[in-house]
Length: 172
Image 1 (cartoon, rainbow, N blue to C red):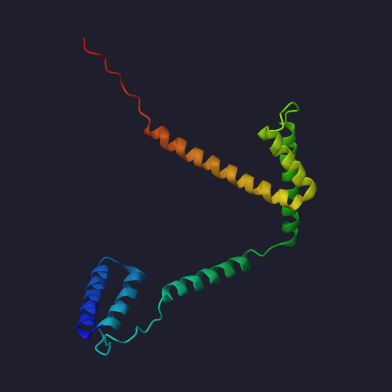
Image 2: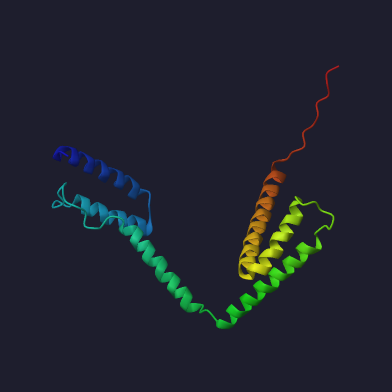
């Protein structure tokens, strides 16, 4: 790239950053002002690389999130008794759901009845891999919860948008 093209690009960058800086406050403004000072410095030649490595903002964010996560895990340590309780609760929940599923099963369903097929699949999962069944049922619970949340939000939105329309009487 030619030096005059680089200088023009640099001038546009400085102008854009000045415009953006005028609309900001706080830490964001200070960061932009620091960067502007670097760009305006007389020793900053157009072909020099910036002092900061690329993507340093993203690295800082990741470092902050990692630090916060480690602080939170230190504040809330994992208690072994809770792990046992979670395992017990998962087992009880799976058994309860299995009982509900079997209770709703029809005895006279045909071989391709979806409810009968689902009940057989759940019963086989319980026999072959109870751990997988618990994970599967937790996944289904999550999906059911998301569906309820979606239905609740759509019913709130549609209730507000429904208006009674007055019927016009035909002329005559």
